[in-house]
Length: 260
Image (cartoon, rainbow, N blue to C red; front, side, top):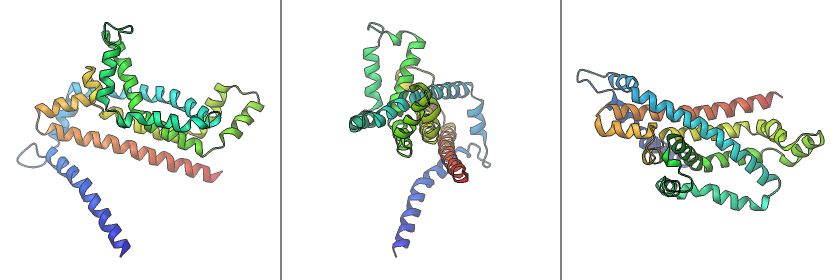
């Protein structure tokens, strides 16, 4: 009886999740009356703005991942090694982006870094890109920190550090050649989640007036009929590819460890 209820709930959850997606996919293929066609997908992929905005978001996502790793891995490592009593405080700070809406963050950026401020980042394209980059880092912080912290729990940070120090390694060497390889799967998980977040983000890019993929999706949705559904399916596929890569990397690593 318990198994029947569990399967029933599981199937209802699948229907609730997949039916809207199937409806969106079916509508995106109905651009012609005589039958299904991929014209909406061809129209989207042939759009120069699609390629430009998607390429821009991919570059921003990679830079966000790089900055996030440089920020989070040393912080999580140091908190776990030297400042364990500050873990609740750090965890609370990293969770703040989940309760503070992105629109509050971006208006704070505009207020602090406008052209009349002490640091007029909004007055240039490079400065605005930097603002957007750090906005993405803030939004991805809860996921990146949680992933890295979980990875650090699986290793003996103190013993590894003492062993490396006994061999003459400095802090940079310890982080780059000892700690980072041991938490690489966790870092990859956080990186894929960060990539998925940046690709679909709308508020920061739109209010900072940057040519990202999120505002492009909104613009297409306001002016076309079938192309928005195609874009939604493409964005959904990108997210699931990222989730699949997380699972693939995790399984590959477990398999590699088992062979040792």
